[in-house]
Image (tube, rainbow, N blue to C red):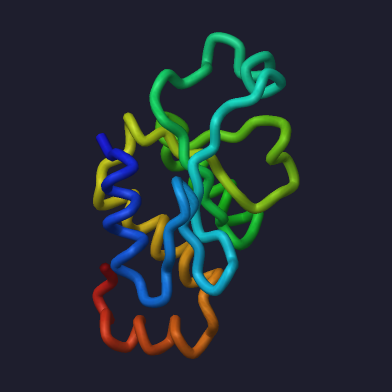
Length: 128
């Protein structure tokens, strides 16, 4: 089980990442953010509405999104609002901190300038 404190620790460990409330960004580009469920989401999810906190994470491509959804349907989900958009919603009460860190790093690599990302990858060849 992960918390927003875990999100902050993972995100802020990455270069140039800033936090404003429950939104973590790099140079003005959102990496991850808390995502409350809206009435339309609740209606669409029906009995599948998660009870715990939810994080929105960019995936970069729809293929990467589909892979996460297929691999861990208990941890990742979407609502109709996200159809056709490369992002997933993450159930923090289900995902462990290691996997959460991995998806945050992947989202950060999409948002950060290429040179900053390349330097971080060179310094962390085995990942976070």
